[in-house]
Length: 140
Image (cartoon, rainbow, N blue to C red):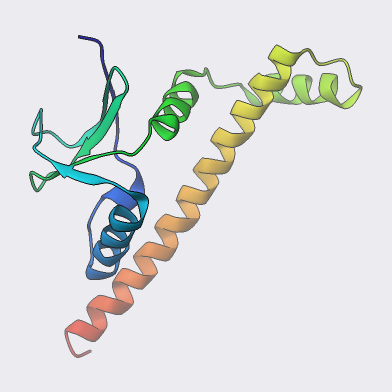
């Protein structure tokens, strides 16, 4: 059995009542089906064509398709470029000499860097919302 495993996506973690509502809506509208956990360990898993995720609370959900998992796995497997390598490849692309493989490497690196930036922004925004929510809940 060939098992592939990734960390949970941000929306899959239920941290606050707001994120729990978002989770429930995504599961309902996205076509996810509740299943029995296989490993009882938090993460996203793929065996053959089946993809599911398991949460710390013991629940598990079957994903409607594997394309997101496959894409995330490909991005996780891609090596990171240094700033110098990135500038060199961008220059090759700018003068229209980049091969298809070089274009794919640039695409992956740009996507990875964009994802990191978005996660930083979301993390800061999530923290601010959480702080406001907690202040309201305590009557401060």
